[in-house]
Image (cartoon, rainbow, N blue to C red; front, side):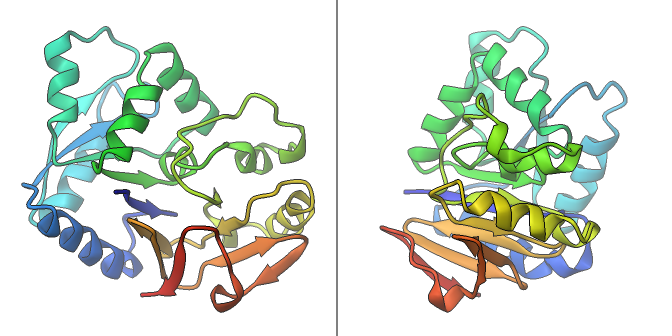
Length: 232
């Protein structure tokens, strides 16, 4: 059973409802409160990790383990990661994050852990990685998602994800164009919006935008095989 929490951004007050749903997910699974943090790239001062610790601490949760994909890890280290009650995939450079997951051999095990019911939290880049491809990330660097050929990611969601929608007026036209060449629905979120996937239920928080076949659609019109879509 999938348990996925996707944030466009996290440390904003509008995320309170998503935070509450995360706590409910953890309680429903009988999980504890320990969350592991997978860094998207070098973080020598651990600034983002420490900010995450403070954020989760206010929710009564413990961001307890820092996992650096660039360093070798023992079997015990990896076991500790997957023994966590939830795993947080940090924001950052999406392409670099994906490459680190592949080079470290962690892409497959992380996907398997989530497919077996582990609670996986993604913020920005970390949320994009839950989709079948990171192609939408190309828009942030002025490239075309249509041209991305090596973006295969965790493949956990039936949709593609795009965060920070409100940051630039060019994002919606670029996503509309891309939607004509991808068979998957694209879910785009402003900061403060998010999605929770629990089993076959997709819960929308805030005002996420669904884009498919060159049009912006409302959640009530969305049909995703095997999943129901609702507003939280």
